Image 1 (cartoon, rainbow, N blue to C red):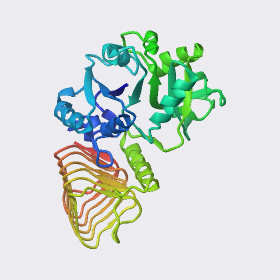
Image 2 (image 1 turned 90 degrees about the vertical axis):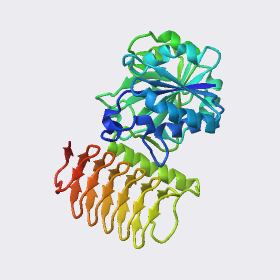
Image 3 (image 1 turned 135 degrees about the vertical axis):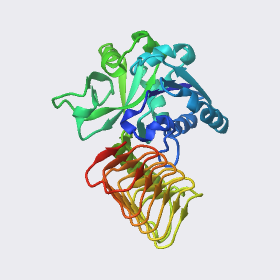
Length: 359
């Protein structure tokens, strides 16, 4: 079985992190975003994963070569010379996908419990051309909403970001498609949500599968942090030994084994500390991610923020309100950063009291 991951382009919603790293390689809970999906696919015996990319594929080559050897799974890149939407990349990759068996399609911004084995069983059971994973959402107008028969799971209609209430079961960005679905797609920029799924539903060939676990779109900072919290809670519910334990940790905390944490720190809840991070004494961190190689000096407070690779945070600093620091940012002692978006390699020497971008 094969799978295609819609990686896409520049990752502008996740800037400034994607100014120095392609989005699939940005760490999420101490693992490259794309690796969460590839590892889930490997567990259901997917043997080849195709990444549909239009930006920076060369940067990913070394990483992907290393990871495919580790997992024993082939990773191929399908390069777009122009943006092809969410359906066009499937047609472009048709020679790689083949025509012998169904294949998975993932939106690369999605993280969830990935009920892939159950989706395979459902797809075989109903015999349709496509199975779409659904999740319940609080704000239907922001998502593609699916109307379906609760008994047969056959999809009746697909409404992309409706302005009026039609339901709250949304497209979760994970699909299992039979090769015949490619007949609905042309080699041009196309939307799978607006063009392909409605046509499949009209032909009675689209079926739904409900997700019972967590789900998040992590394509922008505030959602990245929300998804981090949900993923950590999922680890807790599974009794994962990866979560940190000890008197300095509160709630769900994930710490790389190479990180160093000083005395009298309070870490958590909902914190991820990456490889090689150094945290000095008396630091308080909650609802935040520290990407690999960052350093936090003594008596600093960090909340609801993302600290970029190799950044250095001074002593008695306060960083909060969905602040995002790019790679190699320096924040001087006793500075407050409130909702700051700091581009890579910048130095912050004065307070940022209102949300703004530092270029």
